[in-house]
Length: 243
Image (cartoon, rainbow, N blue to C red; front, side):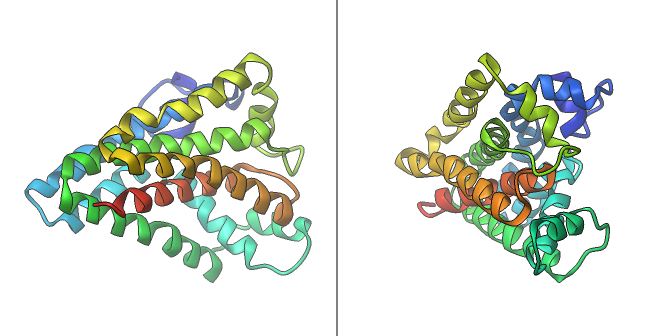
């Protein structure tokens, strides 16, 4: 876990290599537990502050805990998907440090619904909102793990290559089991709506794999991270439907 936390969060742990993080990739969903604990206490501020303020602070907390690493992926993928051309051209845009309107639009479409849904949950029950946010953080990494477990890297030099290679044999089986089961305890307060919320993990992973394959010729770090961010939003929106 230390290697994963070093690579995927800003927590003050001893630095580790990408190879070390890849070898622990089957535990990736558990990273969401740590990032979720950054945001969950901030959601509880809805007992004292306007729920919308608490929701913004909480989402900011989990994004900050991850070092905005995957938010950068949302920007890159948004810009790349707006480009006309073949996968090679789109992969080149992924590496471009400039931000275009596609990236800004993607940020809005991914994070605005998340804040709105979390606000609705916080208005109804701050404690339920906190549990759901932790579930959403775990689910985001579960989707990422599923994509890495079954996807094909778009390029040999992609950061996803080491994770794909490490997720084989028993690690792959264990990782898929963790991806499916880890969010469930935190979805129990959501009741029956927790079932479709949990399905968001699988649906988002399938969508991410399909779009990545068509647009980029396979998966990469940006596409995997962006799909994880989308999963958080989908889960929060689904659960908020019964708030």
